Length: 505
Image (cartoon, rainbow, N blue to C red; front, side, top):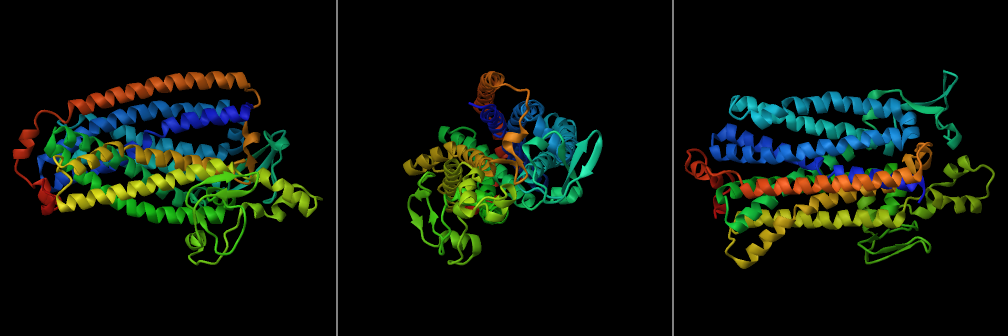
């Protein structure tokens, strides 16, 4: 394999493993705020009990997430030094903002969240919980902003550095491989860079996915307690909060997904076409539900719904969605290959396509699993409303509770598949339509060095993941504590009455 492929595998490995944890902390942070908020409002000690236990899970996830995230910052300087020089002015400002506004806020109040239960008042502890949750969200904000700029760059200009002299370049300047190391992107407007064309849509989509990840972690563990007949009052209250939260978030995620997909259509048409396996531009563009992509024959085989893609993209059934055979357009190609005939330009076009088969499959995995999550959420709410969700003595309810136990994997799969779709679909660009991935590599790194690092990272991450699962299982087995009976008899609002009188077990 080439250094480029190996370096991409290395970064994908480290990023994918790290991304298991931040969505859980973001989602758990919101739910901790909700649980503590209910406790402050109702004075029901049960919700203090809920928040206290899930804070322990939050602390474990946070620790592993921090440990796994540091590696990627070093990779920018080792494997991707040319890229780092090119976007340092832009990427550095976003990462600096993350450190100032996110990490210090999150870590500054983390000690109060974890260890301040008996040392500060309930309102002060609730404030600390809010600050930690806000810090986790701010961290996502700046990381997504930096990545979104790579997808849809804005608020910058290019300049050439020659013997210490900085010369601005024209807006339509095309970066060549020989420019790497001498040309860089410089911020013109910080807020234009932050609010680039895709940042708000992508940020909303990422945060909602993280909320679902935290919610289904709670749903999974609570369902396991219900199946085992342990900590029943705790489990019922936890699963009610998480299920209702998850169902609301699913509706918001559907709206966000529609806006995000249409944003991809506007800003990255090649990615959208690859996501849908679309090669030909035709009226009443159909949507393929699932199938296989044959890039050589330029066709996608699978069941399809006529006109659906046109409707989803343009809200009418006729307008054609551009296929890869027309992307990028001739003007884009002619600027990079002057003097070629239209036929010769057409032969160059596939160079600028992403890996269509991989993009198509990852995108459809996200859609299929996301639809299953939506169905599970609303079936859970229905069973909760009808009073069936806690009837673990009924066979089919017990089977559904086992589905809920394993449903924790659903948001994780969607998060990973979504990010792979976004990153593979951006190729061959590391900065869309500006800098090719192959030009962002470090020149001093050899293939054998990258292979060695991949092996070492894999071993270390396996050890970390094993440790995480061991500690998580230990906390789950120990449960929320032995004082549950005290909370069930304590005065305050009955958790069943808080949600629905019909939801009692």
